Length: 54
Image (tube, rainbow, N blue to C red; front, side, top):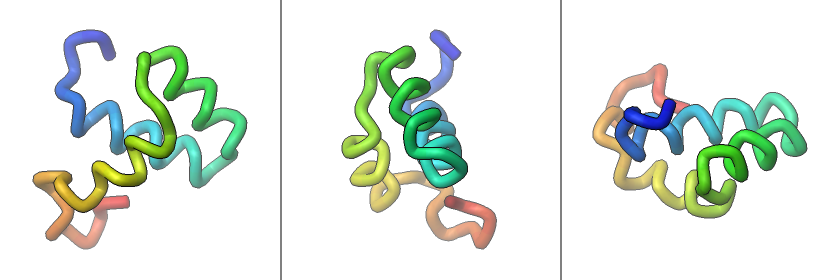
């Protein structure tokens, strides 16, 4: 995911976090991000208007 845009990384972190918070934290750490930032980034996600956006 190193070449993925940040909003995609944040979406992945949120999905992982909702499945299992420990897993989400590990994914966030591996991507150099935080779960808190990923949750906050949901408001600015370009796909937020889609029903499938988590």
